[in-house]
Image 1 (cartoon, rainbow, N blue to C red):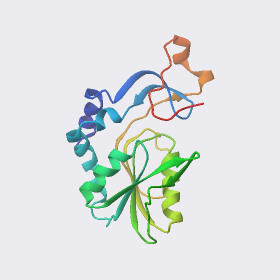
Image 2 (tube, rainbow, N blue to C red):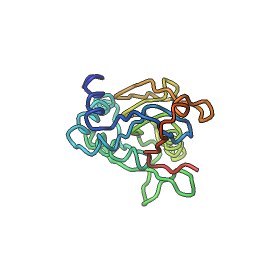
Image 3 (cartoon, rainbow, N blue to C red):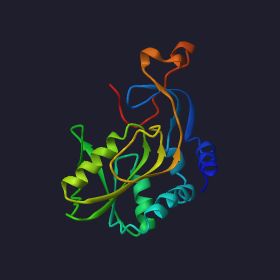
Image 4 (cartoon, one colour):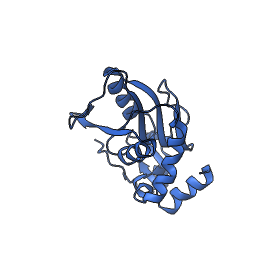
Length: 191
């Protein structure tokens, strides 16, 4: 898929929203990626995730791991296409952890998958879990990289779409000054 086709897929499924949004980081932005909107369609999900699977098909990936909840659909589909096992990490007491009796073996070759990377915090937590277990983290695959090139995990990262999305500190947000209603469409609660 080309960048234009992926972007069009996001727009046609209402996964790329425009307005005034409160991000998980607490910052404000005029654009928001609600990947769940595109991931509800299995054909589009398969096509988008194929870009990631192609990148890592010759890397002997044994397990794909994703942070819950956003990365689960992406990780599952990439793992399916790679013929790999799939597991996820989830928050417990505000810390990302493996639950549900999931295990990672020492030396296991893993790929971390996520839907959207902004700061990369959740992905880094999952990488740390895998490394603590002695796994070899081969790379990271994400649907949307909105970090503006700032996300660096010390391993190769492939994204299907990179867009520069500007965000603002709440006290310095020009969208607030326009009086547009602030919306929090994501899955994580903000204090």
